[in-house]
Image (cartoon, rainbow over all chains, first blue to last red; front, side):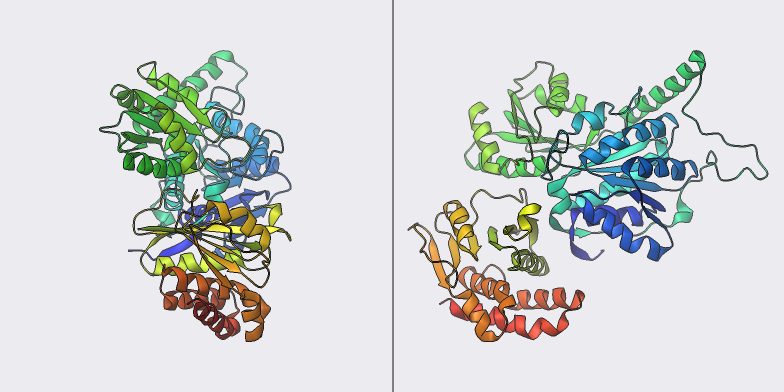
Length: 351
Length: 179
C-alpha cells in the first residue's frame, strides 16, 4: 500500500498529473489554484519535463493544443476568469479530436468575482463554454483522494476518446489538506501509441490536425464523428455515487465539495430519523440522467444543493422529469453552505 | 468519534501551521482528518483561521457549524468564534492578549497566558505551539507525543530543524498550563 500523506488538493492534482505521465504543463498563475502551478514549477523541470509559465491563459491553452497535437500527455490549470480565456482554445482542441486535461479550481464569479470557493462554472464546463457543438468530459472530485484518482482517469479518458477532459474542482477542494495515497507513476512505455500525432513525417505520410473544413458536407461529417464519440462516452463513462438512497424519501443531489458537506447533513438528518440520502454525480458531463431518474421513481423529493444560482439544477430537473419535487438550495459569491444550512433545507422538504 | 477545532488569531501567529501539525499528528495516530484554511487577503496582517476535523470515520464536511473547541489567540477571534462553540465545548483563550472573559456559561474556558509562556521560554514565535499544547491537555484529542513528532518532522522538512527543541518546550509549556 502506498504511503498516506497529508496533502493539499491543488498539490495532489499536480502530483497525480505528473504520475500519470503529463509531459508538458502550461499555465498562468491565479488564486485559488496557485499551489498546483507551484508544484509543477518545482517538479516538472527536475524530471526533464516541460513547465512553462505562459504570458497569458490564451497562450497556455494554445501551447496545450500544440503539445497535444504532438502526441504527449499535457495539462493546463486555472481558475474561473482564466478558464474563460481558455475557451477558444478548448473548442479548437475538441474540434481537432485532441486529448488534453484542463483543471478549473472554481472561484466566485461572474467577472473578476473573488477567490472564495464556488460552483458557478457548471454551465461553462458542461454545456459548451467555447463555440461549436462540442463537449468535454467533466470530472468533479469531492475529496482530495478522489482528486488524485480522477486526475489519473482524466488523462486515460482524454487519450481513449481523443477529447479534452476537465477536472472541475473549487477553492475549497484546492486549498484543503486531507490524507491521500498517491497513485504509482505509470510507465510511459505502457501508454497506447498515437499514430495520428504530428511527430515529424519521416518515412510516412503527413498527419494533419485541423478543426477546419470550408465544405459544409465535410464539416458536417466531422461533427457527426464528434457526436458519435459523445454517444459512446455517454454509454460508457457515466459515474456517480449513491449514499443512503435505498430507503430514502428525500435525496440531496450535489457534486464536488458541496456533496461532502451534504454527506454530513445526511448523517445529521438520519440521526433525527429523517430518511435522507445523497446522489452525487462524479461525471457532470456526461450527467447521470438515467440513474437519477431511477432514484426519483422511489423518492418524493430531490433537493439540489449547489454553490451557484442553480446550474446543475437544470440537469437534475431534466433527469427527474416531474417524478418527484425538485426544490433548490444554493449559495453564491463564494459563500459555502454549512452542514446545518443544508439540514435546515432538508427539514423544510422532508416528511 | 469526530472532533473539530478552529484555531484563530492574527496572521503571523502561526495558526495555520498549528492546525497542519495537529492534522498531521491525527493522521499519524490513525485518524481521518481534514484541514481547511481561511485564505486570501485577510491573511495579510488581519485575522487567519483554520478548521481541523479529526475522526475515526471518513470526514464529510471540512466546514463545521459547531466546533468542539476553539483556540483564540486574539480578541477579534474570541468575538468571532465564541458563539459557535458546541455546548460543553472548550475555548482556549490567550489571556496575554485578550482582555475579557468568555461570556458563555455552557462551555469550558481555559485562560492561558500564551504569549507570556512563549516569552519566558525565550521565543515569542512559539505561541502557536504553546496554544496547541494547552488544547491537547484540555481535550485529549491526540497524544502529546504524536504532536511532538509531527511538529519535529514539519520543521525538519522545511529546513528549520534547529527550532525543534524550542517548539518541544512550547508544547510542554502549554500542556502544563492547563490543569
